[in-house]
Length: 194
Image (cartoon, rainbow, N blue to C red; front, side, top):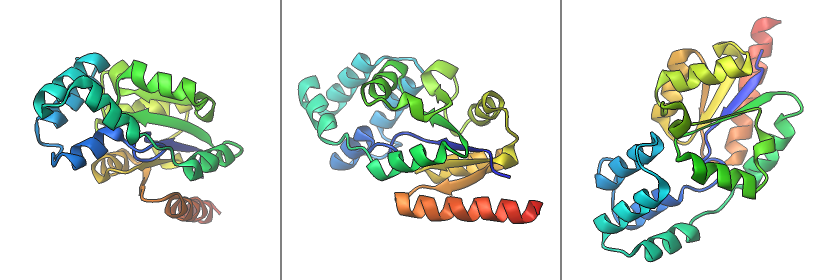
């Protein structure tokens, strides 16, 4: 039986402004900006240093960079509404590779903290998805077994990592697709038990 749903934040709950910026400038995750992002996700640099390094790489000013990021910070209200509805039946968790202050400020400003029983941020834990420790930590804090949880992420490598731990996985595309796939997993698990 499914007892918990674990969500990624960027490109699931809210568009990832960094990924949009990389696409706009022709960068991939393997290019220098991707390494700068990984360092921030692990807490090695802060948000100010992140923006300064990206500005240096791209030739933009930090002001131009921040303005471009701000243009791409759109929330998926369908996902937010769906999570609100799920909370009646399931425990929920947020697992995000992010700089702590940045993400916690977004969650607080948009009153999204209340959507999650557990919030794990890579720069606080020292682990980043797809590290198995990130998933194991979430399961422990939620008090559920791997087969009782579903993980939702836009990146297949993170979904695959969760599945290796025994968690059901969904690669996010749209909130309608998420709803359909999650309902199928929940039903399949109920039938296997019954």
